[in-house]
Image 1 (cartoon, rainbow, N blue to C red):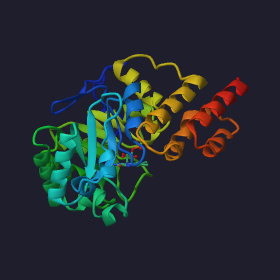
Image 2 (image 1 turned 180 degrees about the vertical axis):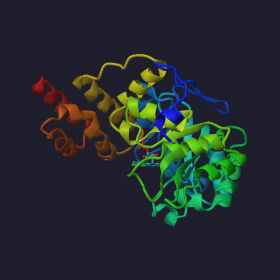
Image 3 (image 1 turned 180 degrees about the horizontal axis):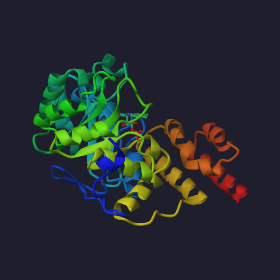
Image 4 (image 1 turned 30 degrees about the vertical axis):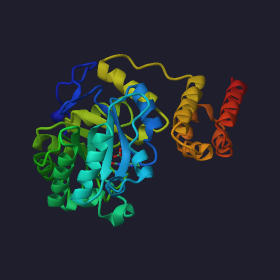
Length: 342
Ligand SMILES: Cc1cc2nc3c(=O)[nH]c(=O)nc-3n(C[C@H](O)[C@H](O)[C@H](O)COP(=O)(O)O)c2cc1C
């Protein structure tokens, strides 16, 4: 099927409708993807500030949450900005999932998402995440357990892949079962588990999911700017989009996508000083949640490359940051560099 065949009436210079998941209204219909060790409260705060409609926590193990592990519970801390809390959990034991969902809802979650997409073999010896796409009856049972756990206090959603591999692309059939079990929306990363994070994203398969269910569908995979957002939405006919890697260190992407959703011209690109200030603010917000400055600064290194790329023509900033473990020292070095290059 061609793009044109799937074209729909996105008004020119468009204003998309808000994404409505149960009682939760999400505007713009652009979400930040859950990303392990990256979408901590600081990252979600920055994303919300720049115009992301909803930011999801990294995946949280239901077993640890249900057992009351303090470090695990810390992963579902809300952002600093007051945006709705969306907690993603994973597991394969229904009673644990029910308990974890109840804890998330008690902790203020407006949405609890069930991970059916993680490709990792390490996660619960590979039996959770995408592996559950091969066990449709259990996956549906888990959704029912999570619905029971939240007891009407939060919306329950699922995040799938296209399927396990090229021979088992069952997202449309599975989505039907999961919605019947109580899922109020479905996010689809349009790759199979076998593809992991490479290869083509199949937005047409997401269109099949959209045609199969009566709840909102969110398209995910390789959306990195306005043209790819527009393409993904046109082909998949999804109600919203989820952005992962492209926004790491580029929260301005959310501002650009929001402007497009609103039918406004793109905002001007950030200046060097704005990039530095936003990176430092992101670091400070993360530091506020950690008791160890060295570790927090280290964890924030993943974001530095993209934040600072336009200032780092000779590729010296990254290694310089990697040698520092105090935020004050990083700040002084970055502004010195900025003054030196004008
Ligand atoms: C570092 C990293 C961590 C991720 N962690 C999670 C996770 O915790 N839960 C989840 O559902 N997906 C996770 N994903 C997958 C993303 O949510 C998303 O589906 C995938 O990256 C495709 O979207 P993108 O092309 O916009 O990055 C992770 C991806 C990356 C790169």
